[in-house]
Amino acid sequence: MDSDFYNLLMAYPEDSGRWRTLGREYLYESPWCSFRVDEARLPDGAEIEYGVLESAGFAAVVPVTEEGDVVLVRQWRQPVEGFTLELPGGGVERGEDPREAVGRELFEETGYRAEDLSRLVSVHTSPGRATEVCYLFRCRAVRASPGPRPEPTEFVSVVEMPLSEAVRRVYGGEITAATTVLGLLMVSGTAGGGCA
Image 1 (cartoon, one colour):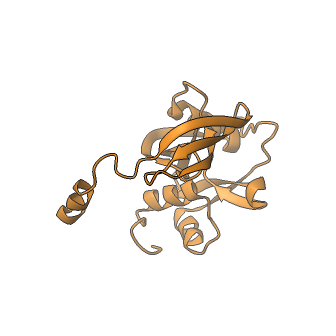
Image 2 (spheres, rainbow, N blue to C red):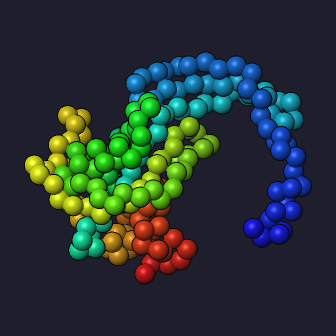
C-alpha cells in the first residue's frame, strides 16, 4: 500500500464521519426488494431522513465461448426506459450460493452452461442508494441443450460478439450497465486503460 495513502487513512479515527441510525420505517416490501426510510443523525448533530433500497443482491457472469465471443443478453430495463446489453445474471435467493445462482441464470437466459467458473469480485452496485451486492464471475460458455428457458417475465435475446467488440462498445458508451462494464473490462484486461 502506498505510504501516503496509508497515512491518510490512519489520520482519521475509525468512527470519524459515522452516521447514527435513530429509526427505520419500511414503505414498500416485496420478495425482490424493499424500500425504507432511515432517520439518521449526522456527525455534526443534524438529523435527516435517508431513503435506502434493500436487495438480496444478484450474481452475473462474463461467459466467453471457445471462439472468444462474449455472450450477452439484450433486454428492456424499465428504470432507464430503454434496452440494455448486459451480462447474464439474476437474483441470489436467501441462503443460495451465488455460484449456483449464476450457473442457473446463464442457462435459463442463454442456453449456455458455465464451465471453469471463477469469481472475479463482489461489488456494491450503488452504495449511496442501495444495499445491493453483485457477485461477479467469469466462465467458459459451452452451448447446452435444449437451449434458453427464460422466466415468464423475462423477454431477453442472446447477443454474441467478440470480447474486443464488447469492450469497444463500453468505451463508445453503448454498454452502460455498471457490473457489465466492470466484468468486461476485468476479463479483457483493459480495466486500467483505453480500448485494446
